[in-house]
Length: 430
Image 1 (spheres, rainbow, N blue to C red):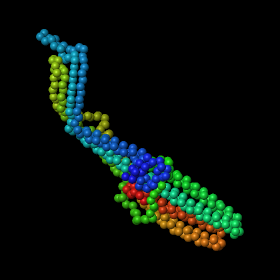
Image 2 (cartoon, one colour):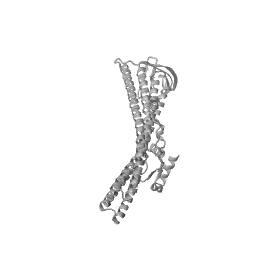
Image 3 (cartoon, rainbow, N blue to C red):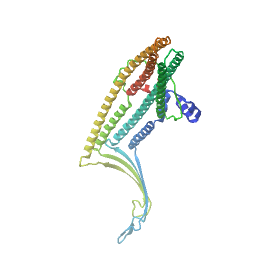
Image 4 (tube, rainbow, N blue to C red):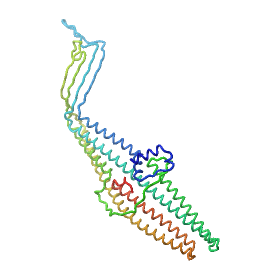
């Protein structure tokens, strides 16, 4: 329900767009699902495949054939005997026929066609699921990339503020004759570098916003404000198990194998005849009575046997071709299973490594914070050079950015793992 409220606000209120919207990760994924052209195309493909399946099922039902015509013949034949002089047929002809036909036996042609369309419909549904999963994956990555960019902007601004305070202190000391011009120039150079860093990080943030807008379909004038706070990463004992692999691409490959099996059955069905029964009704003038120009009608019924034989081995070769296609589909499924299993295992290992990287970055940030605090106290007491203080500030800025980036990188690798195994958690929040 929240997603529709967001869309209504965005559509009707320019003020809201100008002020920006609070966008959670779940809502961003929902917007991306509604905006994705691949998903919309997948829905149409899935609906078309379902209708093809229903059309194949209709082959089991009887068919009614209607045929009506009226025509004129300028000259009809005549039967002339010594005692008889009679026209055969009529100048004006009217004919209407109706026939109800029911297939009684087709050797598996109908059942295999239905099976093929059923598997194709399943494959299209799984393809749609794969597109939805991919949209959630891309949106989750874009949202987390925006969080990384925002964290880096905050870190750069904090660095600029720290350097600004140092520069202010150096100017005061310089005016008092306690700092030389070199210290003043070092502080000014550090401040310019801090400003450049802020500009770079803001550019990265803007690019991340553009990417998220493209995925969610939000207008360029909309200001996105990510909401929610990243929780402290926790590393459960993730051990990849092939049983957890739930990618829709695998199910789609299995459906293709099923369709290939039915294709083999369809080619084998060509060895058998087709038997149909029918009942018909015919009415017209002169119809069957060629000697009396009057209306008449009649009913008919019977059986029709159709059995085709190709002397060049067409049926045999079609069957062998279908079997080869089946083997190819099976090999493709095994290759896909192997590839996805490897990707999932690697993603699990990368996630574990990302957690260790985060813990190390957290420790380094705490150390750098303490070092800068102590250095600031020493610098105030005149026991450390300005250059050394600026070096420690740069180290603090670097470790702070690494710490923030490592936290969100953990969630990026978690997203990779969710996508690799096809977990429903990829659609949720942080």
